[in-house]
Amino acid sequence: MRELLERHGLRPTKSLGQNFLIDGNILRLIAEAGGAGEGVDVLEVGPGLGVLTRELAERGSRVTTLEKDERLQGVLAETLAGLDVRVVWGDALDFDYASLPAGTRVIANLPYYISTALLTRFMRSGRVASATVLVQREVAERLGAQPGQDGYGYLSALISLHGKAKLLRDVPKGSFFPAPDVTSSVVRLDFTGEQPPEGLVRLLEQALHHRRKTLRNNLRMAGYAPEVLDAAILGAGLPADVRAEDVPLPAMRELHRLLS
Ligand SMILES: C[S@@+](CC[C@H](N)C(=O)[O-])C[C@H]1O[C@@H](n2cnc3c(N)ncnc32)[C@H](O)[C@@H]1O
Image 1 (cartoon, rainbow, N blue to C red):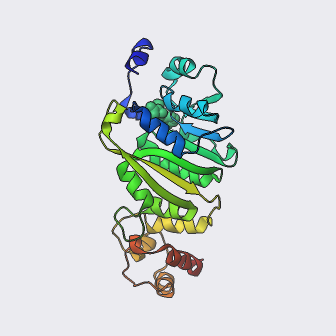
Image 2 (cartoon, helix red, strand yellow; image 1 turned 180 degrees about the horizontal axis):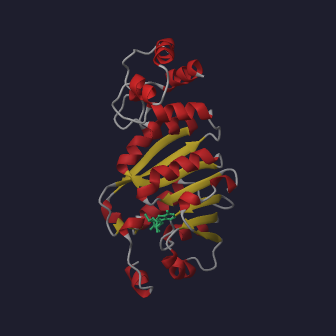
Image 3 (cartoon, protein in one colour; image 1 turned 90 degrees about the vertical axis):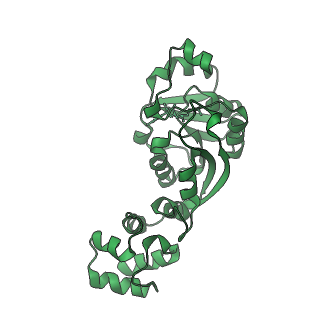
């Protein structure tokens, strides 16, 4: 990898989250766990030098990969030569995920500074069947958290509405070049493909926006009238001073119904 970087006159850019995977075992584990294989549509975000991309394509997947850093054009032309890979140059936050084939599997070592924004886009596209990704361990813990547990918040609730998360394993800093500041984890998210009602998603965002506040305060700040809100909280069987991150999803659904 160092030789590749040197030959192409490249240096990893920290602000783009460029921590390249140098552990072949982890690379194969992600490809395997993500379901890469013959005829599978795979989306990767951030090919970097193309090592994971190549692993995915060599397993027979049809790979689309999104890369923002155009300095990597030369190196990717070399590492991906002859493989069935479509590289889309640009910001992954601007990509139209609804244009993906239904059942697409995301397999990626995500740029950490936008990992939660990307995960939200994947699940809300309705086109992504699963996402097997490397993220910061702290994000991985939030993905699988249940109400009342540390780390439970809007992202955890959104995952529960769309499917489920499974933490596969931690990955030490030394598996990357350069080593990142934090430990990483491989997580697999499986999505049902069903889209929850928009109003429920908005309610969760409003309710879980400020952590450690009461549900009532958060929803008051979002503009609900106090008397309507108090009646709905009572009607959903919740204590008046319940904290938003302690409320189970069925009660949130009931609250949404009562407020609609
Ligand atoms: C953690 S590195 C992963 C590189 C490679 N897949 C690997 O595992 O070694 C993240 C990659 O995402 C790219 N990237 C960063 N921000 C991006 C963005 N907004 N849109 C698309 N790609 C981005 C970086 O340039 C880098 O190639």
